[in-house]
Length: 359
Ligand code: KG4
Ligand code: ZN
Image 1 (cartoon, helix red, strand yellow):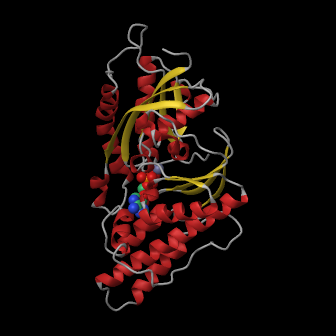
Image 2 (cartoon, protein in one colour):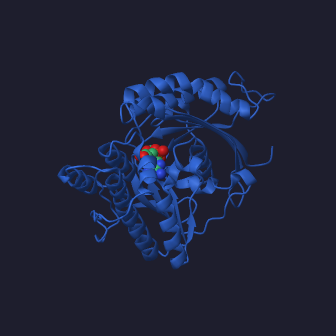
Image 3 (cartoon, helix red, strand yellow):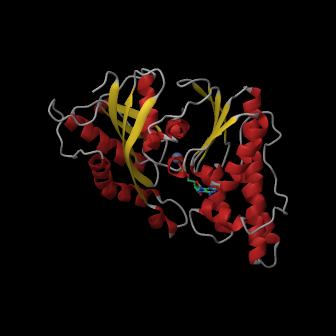
């Protein structure tokens, strides 16, 4: 083993995906050097679709039945067994990282308690990791398949848009970051999901809206909430309500009209996100903008942000889809960077799930 080389097993169960990953990297290198050796995910989307959203009780139960096989698979892809014991002859992993928050408490507890048990049995230290830092560091994972960690130019502005969060994070260098804006009500993904429900589309609504929007025209003028406000906060609740009022006033909803609503709503969200992100990037002289979280899968958002970045001569990074939505690879990456920043590993008894953990 090279000096500074570590292996991290990461576990993620904050919402409705049970995930585990194994990362190997060098924490002492000048530039980040790591590779995700294995990443396994079991999605619960089908279980929740019937209810039109994530049901916390169902999510927690599904994590309980999925966690062991998912962790076993992640380890076996890397050539290890869950039954392996920590010894000089048979090293297991050096650290166990686990998403400890934010998220649904019953879901978080499954991953955290499983990780704590494993860490106690194997006698390895733990790296409790914030889910949002997973999204923040996900751009570093974009080309690890080629064994090459991208060199990112700082300052970087991260746009984190998911079902639970909308955040602008300013990252000065590898280890220093500051949240400069977030949503005051609904998250962007949540607004996509709620508007999809109004249009009688299945859950999760984001991909459905973007599919339907391809057939529509942006000819309905929905509001662009807080776009002109001086701060970097967001609000999507009013936009959602104006779509609701618009639909309520209609006598009939033709399929073309539904497509126009989807397209016009999507455009309003994209205008706000891209408008605020580029303004912040200019103000803070950012050299890079990165987009992450589930909503980063939206093609119009990716394209528009890339076009605006090109105009401003700013690098635009959008990680591959599998790293944008919830996964354990991003948790392993965030944990790896916490070691590079000399954050102290924890004993299992010091690790606790915290549903409201803010970065
Ligand atoms: O990051 P993520 O997988 O989970 C959370 O941490 O919330 O994000 C899920 C969110 C959902 O709200 C989903 O509707 C949204 O991402 N989403 C999209 C698209 N694909 C997923 N939103 C807009 N357009 C998409 N193509
Ligand atoms: Zn997430």
